[in-house]
Length: 330
Image 1 (cartoon, rainbow, N blue to C red):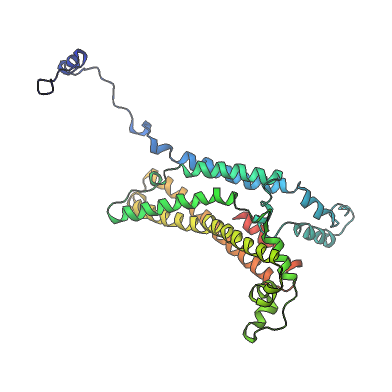
Image 2: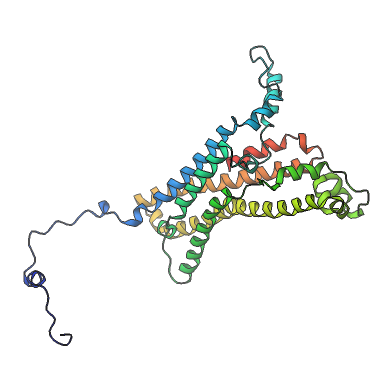
């Protein structure tokens, strides 16, 4: 039977032999036709809004956390009479209230067992997983040859960077057997060794916690339990910083590369004032604004965060809460 003539079903023989119908459907409007690529943006935008909601809800719920309310009671926030107090007094009280916030956003969300920590982790993981399902290549201009391989690598790195959102939610800066903020405060308050090398004296005097890390005598003076805590915290803090760097620095840089490639590919249509190209240009301007805002906020955060550590009195410095709000905005 395999070598003989192939027999088609009767229905298919009839369809093949009959002439084409003259009452076929009219061609559909290309503008109304949709494909899978037209909806590729839905997981990305939906996941991004979930992550944004996680950040905003966490900030509001953190105000009701027991730790924050306890620190707030140590100020005059609940005692000042706004009807009789002067502007200078109210400004001083609000400054103390803002200082009740932690030094970084990481320290605010590290308590995953609390209400605000649970909300942050649940929504960030859901949004991150939704965003990783986006086919980013369908949202960008196509390429050919070597540029196709390069652009595919950039899209793969973008997806990998989005995955860091999920990893960041499971890598807090504090845990049952390590705590970055607590160890930083202890090292900053620890007595420095009198045997300092001449070349690093200014650094040790200006930055107390760096002096504690550099000075071997101090490390040897710590107990075995404290040294083990120091090692665990150093490793966990490094992983935490790498994931945060991928999420807040590498991802915007990759987005800028893709944005420049799309602008180069769509340049002829933009010069021709094509309606879809003008709409894309408006969206590209918003994307570029977001990239610039994230970069500016991170640089602002780093400036105040480093200036807070470089201040010998950094525990009472106002630079901490200024850096916190910049990091929160990024």
